[in-house]
Image (tube, rainbow, N blue to C red; front, side):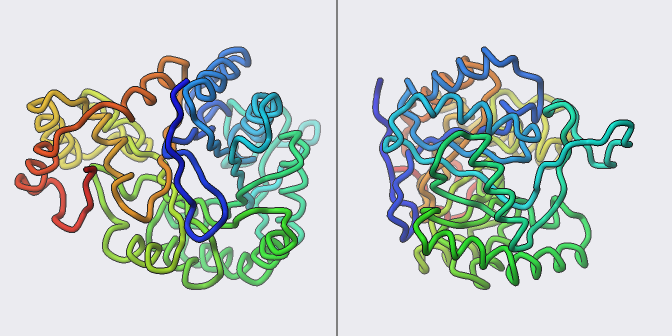
Length: 342
């Protein structure tokens, strides 16, 4: 095993490995993964030196937490950092009950998710998570999915924001002050909502998915400078933008889990062409780029197989010449203000 460098998460006392493990796929987010394969890829991540694992009750309606907990219970508790999320409480479906309109297949059968960002909802959600994980300590608790990308309704978004800040945040803060939780933050798909939460409450960290990548740098202007100035650690999820930066850029490449626009495909192909000229895999540049920003402590791609885990580990270590980043800037494919590796 080769150790992966750790970085302190903002002003918290926690240190996370630069490469983390995003556990949405093993819950059934994009495909059904057999139990044995899920455990094999979690073991491969550990053997590769990964020491930060992120999960959520929403990933497979509890399945991801069950699988992550099973793998990590066999490891020394002081050797890894674990984050999970609040905002959805699991409930059992009644016999004959119609499935909710937003029901996701591939989750644990017989369960559905109910939104709840209240004080009591946060306490119930974390209690459920502790039991599913089978671990007595959760290092990081993240507010999940209060963003327009998920909700699609500004009025409802504002209502959930107020509910969280008036109730759920108080629960998180109490648990943190009591030492039950090591750090609190948000797991969101929008940089502007990360900034809104950061300004509204005393958060230690933010997990930003997809909004600071080699393809798009929406968090660069306001959120990331604010995070750096205020000691808020940032975890970057979705470094491949759900597939468009993962390898070849075919016509049907996905961005944010749907077919990418022609403009995004054209830009991704131009980036890939620069990478090819320097003998570097597009995915390696995509994985390493966010880590150059001083606010970002870890990047957490998901994986559907042991092969993808080992590929991510290799991509993190692939040498990338400075000339590649210089050419991307010269071609207008990276803004001048974006820090680059090296």
